[in-house]
Image 1 (cartoon, rainbow, N blue to C red):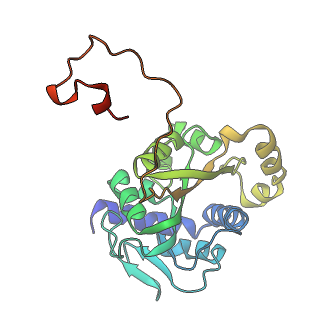
Image 2: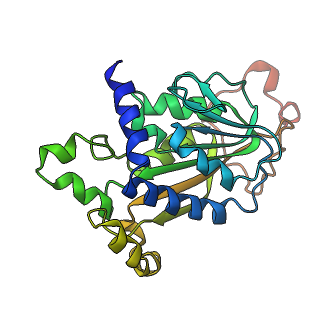
Image 3: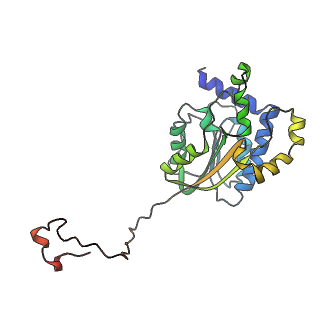
Length: 254
């Protein structure tokens, strides 16, 4: 088993533990609210099998697919995140829950995810905020902490993902922050400090532990738009010599 696949297995196992389940519960709750009014007949999730619960937030009427690097579920399509085995423009909604953090080529993975989104479709990206409260765990000098997910992987900045989306001809339509509780507490205290989520969303948005980005494909119109000139053209006399075919003003049409 290569190193990346081993890390993905560790990430899957971590999501089944108390803190990982708390992360999944918070993300599922947030996506249920954010995706309530989006059309999503065909949905796909690029992640590990432990994240399949996030597809329940889609309420998709037809196909639900989970692309994972290993097969632990009946609905799993095994494949590589940087070479998605799905047809171009075949999905209404594609979800990437921390997927870009668990691939060797995050930019290429995002391009593949954008490729399978149909026109007017949406892509959802969840990532750990490198400037958020959960990133403080990475500052610890404990070697054991750095060798375990999610702290062992790089946290990608939100502005970087947004730039990649613009390059792929996607426009951001919604964004959100969640998880303002520190990840070092026992689960019983983690749940009791739920009030910090309300306070964080009101006062400390930039420091949330996880960001959610929802982007939509920008469709270029096939019919060219006629430009409506309002300003007069400057005097071009002496600027550029006209060709013999266009020396008369009547020959110049603007």
